[in-house]
Length: 223
Image 1: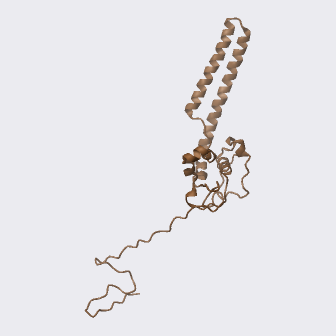
Image 2: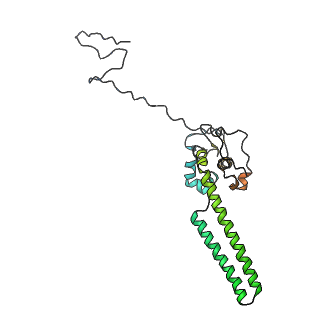
């Protein structure tokens, strides 16, 4: 609809009547500064809490108080595994013990002490096999964690924790709808990422709610 302008008694025109937005003296229209919709606050489905009491799981785990209280471990994204340096160190320590057993066996041979020879030989063999088993287990665990890390990140990153009731939830209702305890959350994430066998026995025995996940499944690893 066109804008109607009326002439004032002094011969001038009013700036604008109803209709299109007014123009500035330079002929340009004022920019609209309307703001977009405000972000929706995460609301806990367990107690209805929101605001400062609700933070992402990542923020909660980074809080020094959570680390002191053990909450960081209960919400951990993945199991802790020895580093490559630790594995090498364990191998060296094991080989030193094997060498001690071998020295005992050799000493028994030189001094005609068959008991020392037998004991040293058995000790060296047992320590050698045990060291290889430990190193192999650490390598296998580290490989499993690396393989499941992308899936664990997808499930862990969007989760929120409510300090008022202790519930863990996904504000968007996916990949899990409803509230979980920290232990249920850890079991869900670790099992989907392939870490199920590395859960503590206490967490393994925790039952997940009957509600089914709403997102696509991952690499299940039920213990």
